[in-house]
Image 1 (spheres, rainbow, N blue to C red):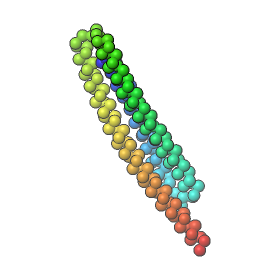
Image 2: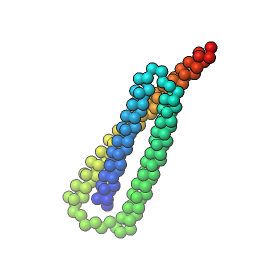
Image 3: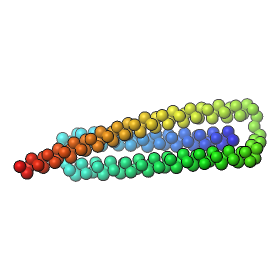
Length: 156
């Protein structure tokens, strides 16, 4: 039982590390978009449209990733329930010594701690991405307003 739980925690830890990498990449992409957009003094309407499309695609990817994370959590919960029912049904008469179980329990606790740390890092990255997205949206609105003003000024 503990061995299976440790393997499950290792798997979750790897998944969390992958999520961290994904969030870092997304954060880097937002930063690059923002820095490229701010470097050009008069962004063209085409550039603005591309930025909006890219932001839309990234928002869609983020939504799909969140749905996947929810599915993974549901799967993990169902797996834990199944393992619990199976162990109750068999009486969990595993042949392991007490010291081995203590080692597994300690390893289990260590993995849980690492997982919590990764979850905290994920939440921090999600906050940063959200802030960058808000800044990007604000920048797009300002640039759109500037383009509209320049178009109106040209008509006069």
